[in-house]
Amino acid sequence: MQYFTTTSKASRRAVDCVIVGIYERGKLGAGAADIDAASKGSIKRLIKSGDLSARVGSCTILNDVAGVRAPRVAVVGLGNFKAFGVKQFRVALSTALHAITRTNSKQALNCLTLESASDASVYYLARHTAQTTAGVLYRFTQMKSARKPAASSLRTIGFAIGKRSDAAKVMLGVKHGDAIGIGMSLAKDLGNLPANICTPGYIARVAQKLARENKKLQTRVLSEAEMKRLGMHSLLSVTAGSDEPAKLIVMQYKGATRQSPVVLVGKGVTFDSGGISLKPGPAMDEMKYDMCGAASVIGTMAAAVKLKLPINLTVVVPAVENLPSGRATKPGDIVKSMSGKTIEILNTDAEGRLILCDALTYARRFKPDTIIDVATLTGACVVALGHHHTAVMSYNDKLATSIVAAGVASDDRGWQLPLAEEYASQLKSNFADFANIGGRDGGAITAGCFLGKFTDGLNWAHLDIAGTAWISGKQKGASGRPVPMLTEFLLARCGALP
Image (cartoon, rainbow, N blue to C red; front, top):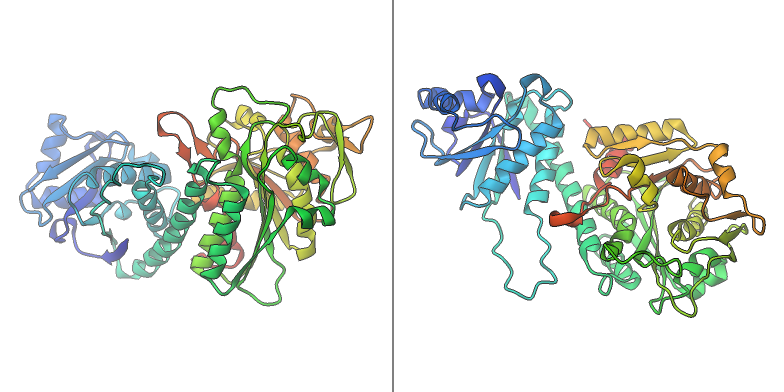
C-alpha cells in the first residue's frame, strides 16, 4: 500500500473515493463539511431525509456528488461528537474500507484524520489507519483449492491533514502501523494454518526464513536431543505422546550495542488435545490456535526487524504437540524441570506452563533486561476477562503498568491481574515441589504463579491471551493480538515514538 498526505480540501482532491464522517445531531466532520459546502448542502439534505446515518459502523457511498472531483464519497457514521475516539475511528474507517474494496477504487483519501479524537494524536490515527487497512485487506486463502479471489484494487491511501507540519508525524505513524500490520498478518497466517501443516517444524522454518531475510536476525533451532541434554524434561513431557518432534526456536535480533535484550517467550502448542486429560470434542478444532503466543512473538519480531528498531530483542518459542498415546505423560506423573524443580502433573491439559517454565529457565542465559511470556494459557482467563482484554500479570507493578499503557495506546488492551502468595499456595503438592494446577479458583492467576516460580530475580511479566488470540463463530480466525501491544511496548522502550 502506498500512502501520501495532503492539505487539499476533500472536494478538490481527484482520487477515486473520499472518506468523510458525520456525527449525531447533524454535526458534520471537517471533510463532510467541505463536501457539503461544495455540493450546496447535499450532505445535510441526505441527513435530514434519513438517507445518511451517524451510527458508528454505518457507511453510504455517494456517486458523482456535484462540485466534488472524486467520483465517490464514502460517508461514515462517527457517533457522538464528544465520545469520538480511537475505537470509533477504527470502526468507521474499517467500515468505509470494506465498502470501498467492493468498488474499483484504486485511491482513497481518508479525511477522518482531520477529526479530533479524544484519546489519540494524528500519529496514532495514521498508525491505526495503516494497521486497519492491513486488517481489512488480509485474506487467508492458502488452503482453498478454488481459484484465489482477485486482490482488492485499492493501492493508495491519502491522509487529509490540517497543517503541513503534521505530515512527518503521519508518515511515521504509517511506517509503524504498516510494520505492525505485517507482523499481525504473519501471526494470523501461523494461527490460521491447520495443525497438520503448522507443526513445530513448520514454525521453525518460518523463523529461519525471517533470519535469512535480515542480517541482524539469527535463528537457532534446538532438537529434542539437545533439550534433553539441557534437562528440559518438563517441556519434553508434553510432547511425549506425539510423533511430531518438538522444537525450541531461538531468534536473536541485534539492533543495539551493549544493551541487555528484551526477551519474548511464546507458547507454541501447535495442537492441544489435552493429552490424556482429553478435551471435549466440541470446538477442539480451535486448539490449533494454542500456538498463537508463539505466532504473536514471531510477528512482533517481524515488526521490529521491519522497523530496524535500535533494540536487542530475543524470541524464544517452545513448540510442541500435545497428543494422547501409549507414550503420553499421565496425570500423577512427576517430572524435573530444567531449573531442577520437580512438578507433579495433575492435569496434562495444563501443558502450556510445562513448556514455558523450561523456556523461561533457558532464557536466563541471555541476561534479559525484561522478559515477557505470551500464551493462550487458561480458559479461566476467558471466564475472568472475556474476549476483550489480555490478562497482564507481574510481580513488578511498574512493568505491568507499562504493558497495560502500551495496550491502551495501541488499542490492544490488557488488564492487570494480581499475583500473590495466597494464590501460589494452591499449587502445593505432597509428592513434588509443586503441582501444575491449583484448582478452579483463580485459575488464570495460579497459572501465572506457577510461571513465577521460575522467574525469581527476573523483570518478568506474563500475558494470558486465551481470550484475545482468536475469534470464534462465523468470523473465526486468528486476531494477530497482542502484536500491537508488544510492538508499542518496544517502540516506547527504545524511544521511537514521537
